[in-house]
Length: 260
Image 1 (cartoon, one colour):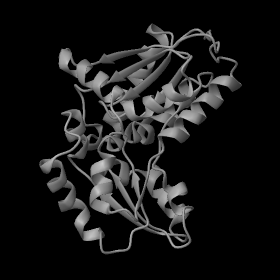
Image 2 (cartoon, rainbow, N blue to C red; image 1 turned 45 degrees about the vertical axis):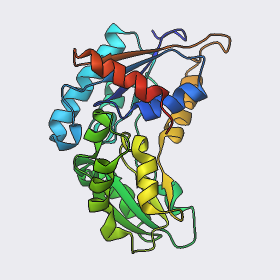
Image 3 (cartoon, rainbow, N blue to C red; image 1 turned 30 degrees about the vertical axis):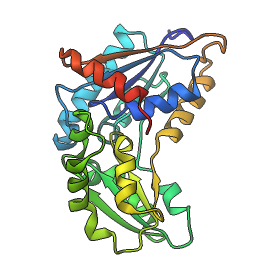
């Protein structure tokens, strides 16, 4: 049975979920966290749904059984779409959250929203996203933009510079004349390149991501289950990666301490 002193596990296919982890640590500094990035199998956005589901379930089983995680955050849009429903069936007693593109706040931000949703090809093809898009397509103009290769910039620690700007211009330029009101960052990697995206989009386009909302929902579920850590406890973060390359852990710590 879970104990309030047990850690929270945060899972992603690589480094991107650290953007969600940062919000969780800020919101719950008293909690202990384990962050695991599956860099060996990244990117998940180019894999089949079945492969993503199997990988995600296998890793979450390890957190619960071997690391005694009291709560789980699947900080990856692709893994959320593929596996969270099944995980809730397997572990109904575990507080568990996923992530989804922050379309709702982007749509509600102004009277006539025109929203660019940047995400992996897999996320944009999933039923979860298509249902979310359909829910709001009568209230906003929504442009889904597949971004194959963008997460790899973050995985390599490239968060700015000419190469990244050229890549983003090639993707975004066809939409910059459409009077966009907002851009939704539909992959947890993308907040790390938020500043470059904002630079290209211009000052009148608001950038949205769902990290804070995910953190708040996890906190709510943990406290509803009576598993909140004592406020006097000083939390810590442990980083793990499926790769044995020590540079992966170094990059995780760099991203965790970087401003986004």
